[in-house]
Figure (cartoon, rainbow, N blue to C red):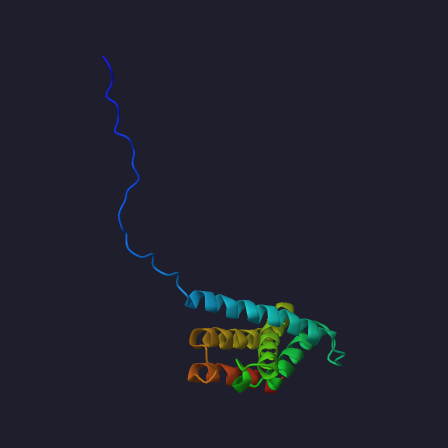
Length: 149
């Protein structure tokens, strides 16, 4: 007895239609890019701020003071602008976020400032626009905390 021989394999033929193009824009990718830029700029801003000879000294108080200085120099209307204005705004904003977090890590007294800056960051990432009322509200709260220091 012999076993049956299976039929020979042939590649499918025919037109399967066009291959869909790869997506060109992904909101998630853009959000990740923005987060990466903010964190990278924050590191640069923090290094810049920490290298400054400031009479407030080192430690949490110095970090909080520098965060408030960066926030004071931040002009949200320049955020996203092309060229030096946009770069300055991005770096000052990122420095304020990172330095406020460093201040809170060093002393819980500065936790409200860090939380306010985190809310600004979250709202800005959510709306991608500093002109949104929710972003403006949180930015005003952070600036108010700085004014009270």
